[in-house]
Amino acid sequence: AQTVTQSQPEMSVQEAETVTLSCTYDTSESDYYLFWYKQPPSRQMILVIRQEAYKQQNATENRFSVNFQKAAKSFSLKISDSQLGDAAMYFCAYRSAGSYGKLTFGQGTILTVHP
Amino acid sequence: DAGVTQSPTHLIKTRGQQVTLRCSPISGHKSVSWYQQVLGQGPQFIFQYYEKEERGRGNFPDRFSARQFPNYSSELNVNALLLGDSALYLCASSATGWDTEAFFGQGTRLTVV
Image (cartoon, rainbow over all chains, first blue to last red):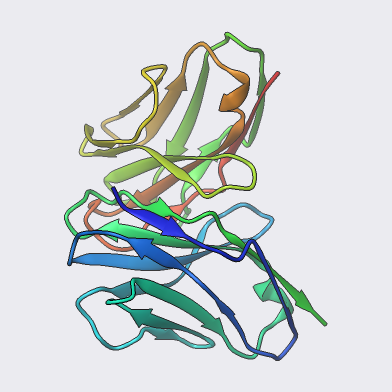
């Protein structure tokens, strides 16, 4: 079974600074997808960024980028120029390419942004 | 277009009762998944349905059941409620189930007393 581990229960950052959230995963599969989701107090899970395991290039979405290290099974999220609206719970998630959409989530990291 | 809608938003039930949660996917989406998120933890996969058939089931007891209707909406039923069933129940929809982006609703907060 696949597992996803987020070792940072809480992180904080100053507005306009950069922060990195860590995620490691365990799998025996070679083809899979990795995601970072944001869950603000409104509770709705919002997709931030996704990475296909077969792609060596790290995904980037505006201020959000990932550092995908397949051999190390590491998938960290970097948020640049942090904004107050980035404050939320962030979840790392895994999905097998062969599964019907089942997501395996980590425990989450609460991100606080200080003005 | 409306996003994924879940009802009700909040619910309080007594131990031993039964509850039904509802989810309407995004128009055109044929796959619905259910997740349980206990406070302070990540969501746990319960079920996935596609084209009205169960395509995946997580490690949950038989007290949990679900179904999908011809209009692709879905219901999650939980029988014989336990205090430990208190959680946020999230519904996610996707076009096929195989696509890589799932869209989540705002969830139903279930409290069992």
